[in-house]
Structures are given as structure tokens and as C-alpha cells.
Image 1: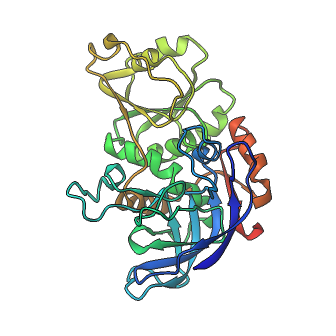
Image 2: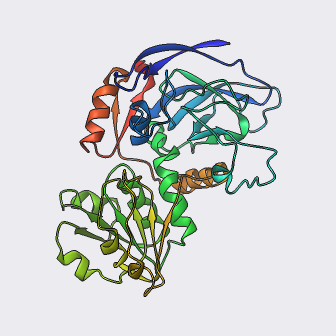
Length: 346
């Protein structure tokens, strides 16, 4: 075992604090990664504070990891020491399940999440990226394009793939009208990616306060949802709506913005059930769906796409000892648009 340093939540009611723990010794198919940057995802906050009711403590959060390979096992063929790599939301999956599907592995049984989970041995807790290094099986390590700003690639490992996957699955591209609900850490990535795919992109935000940013990042249109006229003006407009917010909204009103055969996809996780009237769906053969990150294959595809189009997240780089302050600012939506921890400050 090798000692690792990081920051951990030791209790749902306490701030994150310095923490020392053990990482496994690398096996023949493992990659050892020195973590350089770790993004902060809102789900880190939910889990550190046990807001989803499934937290295991002590917990080292972080599943937006960018780092440098420092060692590889004897059977590793894809990576070498010095490579720029990433680790996302999961670090293993079932390799023997009858239902295994490499394109859909993140929806299959046996998924091992990067933190707040248990490794394949069924007993060892997984610990995430708010730490100095991590040991990951080769098949769950991703290549980061060399020319992209390293610190700004970290959020691609969650925020990027969370938006890329539904955009690809529901066919965003030329001739398609896509709306992004919410102009935050997820939403701003949706704008960049949908624009790069060639779709006509609209941001639906509560106010127009971020309109200048939205248009700069690639939105063609920007509307305030606090204005009732927005829902009249845009009725029946969109092929695809991606909802990145977790707040309670008028779901039936948003469904009314879809064309025939349009789809509203939930990416945020509302606290309460989503109430939908049957007649918001039936007359337009509309659908409401959900989507969660992407497979390793699709995540690598996303990173390559971002490399081709020079897409990274808009970030604010912070020190490790600012993490608790950053959590409070995320809750207040006081960041444009994603916090990333410089792990050199650990």
C-alpha cells in the first residue's frame, strides 16, 4: 500500500479537511497517476453532505481528474510515464456480466464509481481526486489531447461527457434546434458542444444576466424563463431540450416548447418527483428522458472532439484550502463556470 494525501469529508455536517489514506499497490494492468487538477462537481457537495442518503465516510470526493502518468503495470499498453490523462466518474465495471455492453457500461450492473463506492473486491472504499495520486485500471484511464489547457480539461471528465452524451444520442447537429436550460457548470458546456456540432442553440435561463457569456460561448439565442412571453414565443420550437438544473420548474411548460417527436432530457436531479401531465406528451408525441455521463469509449470520443474543436470548460482555479468556500459559492451559483483545484497546493 502507498500513502496518499488528500481532503476528505469525515461527516456530513463537517467541512472537508486534510486526510491521509492508503492507495493500493499497482497491479499489472494499473496506471498510477499524479493528480494535477481536480474539478468540483455539484454532486461532490451532495455526497459530501449526504444529501442523497448514500454517503460513506470518510470520503475523498472528486471525479474530474487530470494528471500525469508516473508508473504503469507490466501489461499496460495504452499509456506510458509522462502521458497526460484523465479519470472520470467510474474506475471499473463488471467484465463478466451477461448484460455487459461497452457502449453502455455506465448503465450496467457492477459499476465502480470513482469515490463513495466500493472497489471490485466488494470491501475497499474508492477515494477520489481531491488527492495527490490515484491508481486506476488501464481500461478506465482516458487520454487528454496535448494542446488543450490542462487545468480546464478536468471538468470535461464529468460536465463535458454529461452534455456530450445526450447531444450525440438525440442527434444534435445541423438543422436541429437545441435548448439548454440553465447557464451554469453543465449548461455552459452544453452551449459549447452543441454549437460545435452545428446545432442551432438557445439558452433558457431564469434571467438575462449571463446572456453576453452565452452568446460568446456559441448560443444563437438567449431567453429569460422568468418572462412568460418566452413560453409563448418559443412554443413548438425545439427538437431537443437538455435540462441541467435541479430546481423545481414548470415541466409541462417546458414540454410545450418541443416540436412533434421532441425530447426533454433531464440531467440535473430535482429533489422532488417530476410532475408531468399526459396531455403535455400525447398530442405532440413528445418524450421526457434522462441521461447519465457516458461510457469510457464515448468519453474518449468526447475528449477527442473537444481536442478537435478546442473546447474546454470556463474555470476558476483555486487552492486546495479554498474547497469549503468553493462549495458554498457553487450553491450560490457564484462561479463562471466551474471550480478546479490546483493539486500542487495540497
